[in-house]
Length: 90
Image (cartoon, rainbow, N blue to C red):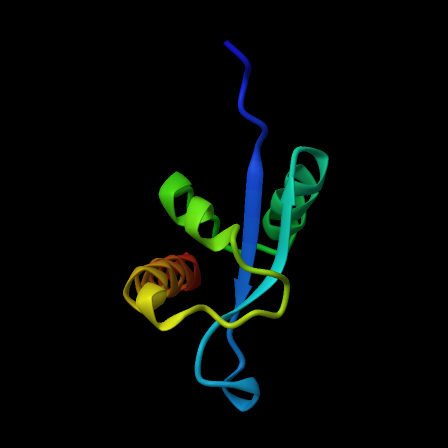
């Protein structure tokens, strides 16, 4: 059985650039490792969700998240907000 390559997708949201989050980076293997390393270095929360990665991997960099994924992506941003609040209390 072949080991599955690591994948990572970074999302960003800037209200002045649109109403939905966008894909800001995507990669597999070595590139994914670098995305995760940079996120860790900059204290950006990381959420692991293989099914979400599978859905988002269909998008290109700078693509807006499609409306049908708003609910799932909202959960990711809620996770980030909660993580941010917890780190600010420390």
